[in-house]
Length: 410
Ligand code: URA
Image (cartoon, helix red, strand yellow):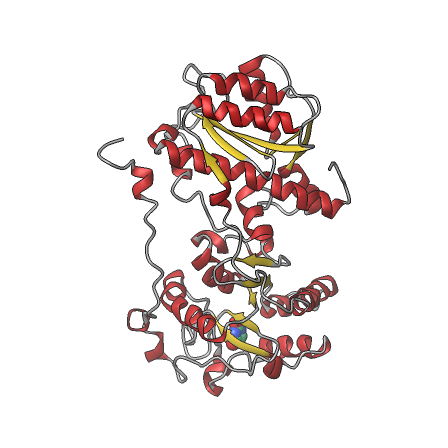
């Protein structure tokens, strides 16, 4: 650490959201017949549909989704009782046609998507949709990449079907496949049915996800740097005997067996009280009492991590470990790449990304489970806040998962 701020804190200063489209940089407008195709529709149901980019037909007619993909989409909407242009607004992530030659459409590049993104966000600000249906990886990359994480487009398969209660803007985001994928799948009936179901589900959402403002989970975390004070709060939680409480460690190595392996900090949340504290002095004893309390059901995200560190630290197993949000996520939906806490926090709670500035510091520079990471380079309050958020989101997600499975511990 050097100077006034740690390097992680400096990275907290996010780039401002660009609101001016960079059409001059992309140049697609000069290469097509219908530059900057306008969003169409009257949007009576306040649903905005976002595709990838205009193709040849759209470029000729100057309107989105009028070619064969558009026909597929429009038919699907009509079949579920929706008037495409009366009930919806329709646009694309990139509003000029990308093409290699006059007949060949091509997928827009990442840069083209980024340069055009402000057009989409300006439309959202103007139209104030309750729901945005994003079709295909490019539309996901444009919208979710601009809100949550740039790498959002990685795999469309993990996004389809969620109804994400996005915080800012306050709106539902409902991803599905692009209609051209369904056309290429030769009428696969399962895909076609799922696609229609995704659309239908999106139209059941009649209002914005948040009546007033979305929850600010950060404000609910008590960051307590003084070990005595933190220990008092841990004992307060133990005395309350909540049926469930989540806990989370941050550590200097992935596995606890290296010479420099140590727990750096910990957090506990029963959903009402969330406390994050350094692993120091009386907090260690208080945490031990919490972990071995037989009445409080413990929740973790990836319990083998917390179990192994606990075993190393205290030489015994956690008592009454009842829930692992990662395993539960997998039981509910067996797609790969969806079980992590950050992804679940976004798709279930709309929680904006909170680890971008932290995650590079949690990876060790050298490969290896006992190689030391740079967690201690993050300012103490920042790493406690991050750790506390993890516990609070774990218990919040666990409760949603239990409800979905019809399981009750409380
Ligand atoms: N595909 C899209 O993504 N958008 C259109 O407008 C047409 C085809």
